[in-house]
Amino acid sequence: MAEKATRRAPGRPKRAEDQVVVEAPVSAPEPKKSAPKRKVIQKLQEDRDVVYTIPKLGGVAYMLKQKGITVYDESTDSVRAMRYCPNEQSIWVDEQGANARKEAVVFRDGSLLVPKEKPNLRKFLELHPGNFENGGNIFKKLDPSREAEEKLKSEFLVTEAVTLVRDKEIQELLPVAIYFGMSVNRKSSDIRYDLLNLAKKKPKEFIESFDSPQVMCRTMIVQAVDYQILRAKSDGVYWFDTNSLIVSVPVGQDSIDVMTRFCLTEKGASTLTSIEERLDKIS
Image 1 (cartoon, rainbow, N blue to C red):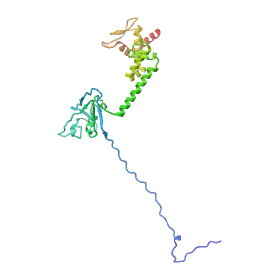
Image 2: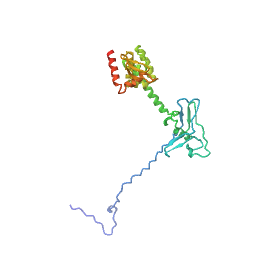
Image 3: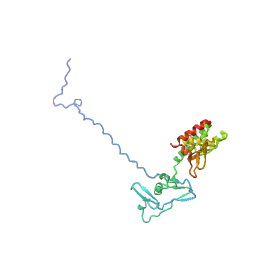
Image 4: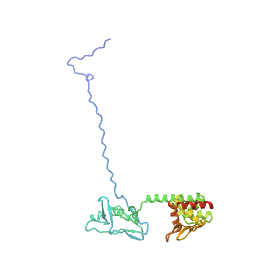
């Protein structure tokens, strides 16, 4: 069946359903521009009070030297004189006014509190050559977190050293005992006790001694003297049987120390081998 064609009378207005609506193309929304990131400017000075301490010889009051203090200034690539003047913003002498008034920097009972309101004093202390961080040996900044970390490492080191004393066989401990000048002609418990005290006082040195060639070399030399393989005199070290000189000892030096250093050289290597072979025959 043929479909009817719908016709509109001439002059008749178009109905809504007869109108063709042409939509404008929809463009994708432009991406929002992100706000520019703010640069984080790192302050030279910390925004808090800081305490500086004198580890040794601080006394009741210690006045820090200011006269003639010069340091390298990286910003100007030059060596400049500095001093602390509370009424000046700069610590550099060439930037301070004619009425600059120098003030003493005094540590009391070994410490100095620097409030955040005194950034010039803090900068003066940061750049001072007496600061530990600058290679000095007078004062340092107290850092609680760093102090705690160092104490923790120290405690672990002592624990490791004590564990070696407990777990090592006595034969492994004897060379260390001899190296540190302890008598080994005693009960093993007495030797361990002395080594335990040493481990607590000098844990790092004690631990490193087990892998030190100086320890083993010195131990063999001491044993060689005890077993009359060597004769150690104030002027030199000799073979006991032939009395021939091995190495001369300078005035004021220890003969065992000199012999140890000699045996660890290329020239003395054959001597050390001979000593070791003679000790093996005895044992």
